[in-house]
Figure 1 (spheres, rainbow, N blue to C red):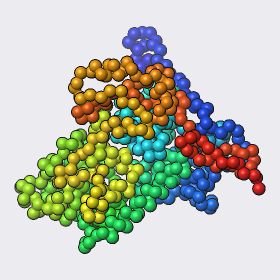
Figure 2: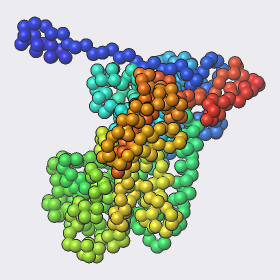
Figure 3: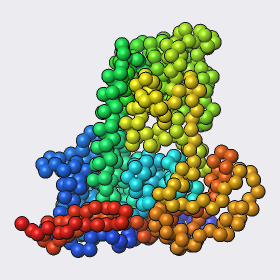
Figure 4: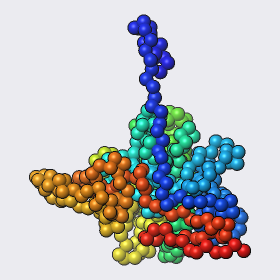
Length: 569
């Protein structure tokens, strides 16, 4: 701005004041039942039975996470110290109604959050799935336009669209359009300079169960530690039970799986065929009863290079110099020949090549992507996975947003439910290992003509959400029904009676309406209320008992219910 002002002086011979950046009017947290009414120095607000490590009485378990590698937590009496090791940020989460810890007792550079959070904006689609699993989406003020979950799609259709990550770099946007409405900004990237931002790094934690355990990380910010612990424990048990069953069903040598992709100059800086050895993919393969060719063995093949873009990925590239690499194959034909030689050892392929519209991707698309020519008969004779009709993709479950286009749940809901992903992989390896009525979700077989499913916001219209359908008609039909339905929209008080619309809109205006197009049907629905004013209550774990042992809590549909305080010993 200073340079701009100086330039103005030189041209116009007069000073021009730089526009002032708006001072943020920070979000004011509602003083609701989330907050404790009184405090006591002898009260531990986070007793062991409500911590993410479960009911162990040892000090070590108070700070341990089971399998996730990239976060830790330590409990104090009135606050939690949460560290994201991946981005090296520390968050101090102090119970609403208690004093904020002083900076001399916490790590330098820590960010402070009064919990449970009441209104968050979710800049990426991945964190939304974790909030959904915790049943905490009523605390979402806005979400990414790429969100796949039906209720997230509905929020987007209703205008509750989160800003892009780049918008955080604009102080004016941050101060006027974000900070006045939220007490938390959740994104997968760190930013130490924004006090309200939480880095949610689940996609970077390497293992399948590692990523799922970030449910606990998310739960910490909403005092849902015990719920998250219980959910993850069930997922973890389900995963290992299924894995034992799938491995026991293997007959003969395990099938070899390859997770492959076609890197392009536009997206990756070079052209290449790539093979992924991401730890969670290798884990899924092995735990489902399969195997992958040794990464070291493939990496030692002449001219095969490590990807400069993605960790644990090998490239068959003929554009190495474009990506700043030395070596690689001299020609595209050489790379194709070597890649095809590798594919001749593979029984099952999982094709991860990105396409804008997965519903249009077919076996013909697959042949073109990986330069397989010579006809179907010749291809089947050459490649085991084609003889086996075992060409899979992980884009089986998607959403089609009018704002952002088609998004894949592989990067959202799949992270939360590795036990279900494992079943999808096991089906690809041995269909008899899963029940006969098993329905896949993410990993579909394009060799068998399985289609990519596009789900819509209509999936959010369940009795639990209480959202009203005001009108429905064939897509393209006259809109008279919609006009009359809009006029008869419920009042704000009526809309607020639903479970999902427990909070009034910030403006107090009539509830918004959204038009949802789902195939041949167009539906008009009432929008859920927006968080930010009077978010529904998430009970604190304990109530002070005036020096006695703290009362424990049961959070039921009836609200916050507490046991009787016990006498101090």
